[in-house]
Structures are given as C-alpha cells and as structure tokens.
Image (cartoon, rainbow over all chains, first blue to last red; front, side):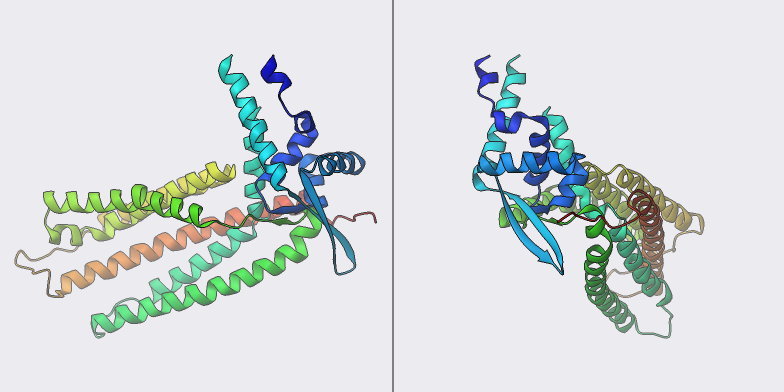
Length: 97
Length: 246
C-alpha cells in the first residue's frame, strides 16, 4: 500500500501517462501528433499538457511553420526522471505481489 | 501497465514508417542496386579485376547518390504530406553509447557467428567446395541475416508488417539459393589453386552476384509493395491535412 501511495499522481492519470510515454521516446512532438496518438479531444489534451507543464515535466515551444502556428512539446529532465521513477515504482509493486 | 506503456513507446518509434514512404524509398533503392548488379554481368572478354572494380564503384555511387536523393525526397514528402495530417515528431539524437551498443551487438550476434560458420565450414570442407557452392549458400545466408534484422526491427518498432517482410526475405533467399542449386553448381577441377583466378572461380563469383542481385530485387519489390499498401491505408485514414484552430 505504501508503494501504491508513492506513485506520482500527476503521471498516474491514464491520459497524462500516455502523453508522458509518447514524449519519452522522442526529442519533441507537436500538438497534432499528441492529439492523434492519444485520441483525446483538443480541450482535454490542452488541459493535461498544461498540468504536466505546471508540474515541470513538459515544456512547450511555440513556433510557426509558414503561417501556421506550431507548438512542440518535450519532456524536461525532471519529467524524464519522474517518468523513469514512475515505471520503476510500478514494476516493483507488481514484482512484490 | 508497463507493457501498455511499452506499446505506446514502440508505436512512437514506428511513427517514421507510418506512411510507407521509407519502405517505398528503400525498395526503390534496392531495385536500382539490383539493376546495376544484374545488368553488369561478367563476360569473359573483361578482365576480372576491372569488371569487379567497375561494379563495386557503380554500386557505391548509386548508394551515395541514391541515399542522398531518398533523404531529400523523404524530407519533402514528410513535410508536405505526413506532418500536416498526423503531426510532427523530432527523433532523439543517437548517443555514442547507443552506437557502441549497436556495434557490440553487430559483432556479437552477426559478425562472430558468420565468421564462426565460415571457419567451421573451412574445417569440414575445402575452399573450392565453399566457393563453388557460394551462389547457393550466400543468398540463403543473407536472406536469414536480413530476416533476423527485419524481425528485430518489427519487435523494436512494434510493426507487425516487418515480420511479414522478414519472412518474405527469408523465403526469397531460400528460393534464390534453391534456384542456383537446381541449375547446378560450378564444377571446380581437382587441382584448382585458390590463388589463381580460374574460369570456374570467376563463374562462381559471377553467379553469386546474380544471386545477390535477384535477392536484392525481390526484397526491393517486397518493400515497395509493403510501402504502397501502408501508404494507401494511411491516406484512407488521413485523407486531408488537419486544421489546427488558432
């Protein structure tokens, strides 16, 4: 039970976990990629990305591709560490049982 | 749960292959190389070293310019077709530690087993027998090697179609090897010395190149077909570019 409570609640939410997993294997990805892969609505995706940004796990960079606004997201060093830690914690919970 | 996370990670890694462009481009390059190998056949009027050097030079040039063209073409296609539909992803930079791991694995699991097999075959058989049977065993061995690489890629990228490509490559290698066996292997006279380029040896090398050309051609066609099917499916699922609200 102590192990379960030690899980990072910011990452543990399924939608945010998916976003963290998606961003963990790339340098950065844009909003559209995350939208398509996570199958969230635009509003939901924005909310979850904001939550991850507030936790310092994700950072956004807003640019333009031609005249089209383009926002790229990437995991911060803190986000990478937190995600690795989360996976380890998750693994240890199931291995102990 | 960790398995589900792994699947998401694999899906992201395999994003580069989502539209089939890479397979089509690689397949096209394979067909070009096969064309060079197959159409530059050895004729007895040529001197062997100059023929071999000319074919090696042409293959190297085709690879260099082919890869350059393919990279530019892929960059343009992805930018104009894929990214507006399903988004842009910037891949992780490969670190020197990762390069070292890849090199170590290549040496441990590819080069050492091949060297071991060659050494073992030299112990149980003569050099002439190995050379005369090269048109048969070379495509089979190469087919097995490429099939292993395809299966590893399928696992790493979470792409099931790469398993099918691997199996097709394996079958193609075996088919080419069996085809060479059925038309009969080159007979080497008993006193043939390895240091001298005997006509039988040249024929064996020439037929091995023909086998290689056939295998590369079949693999190229398989890759192009796989790419076309993937592209059609991708276009059906993502017919128009996505419009992001400002």
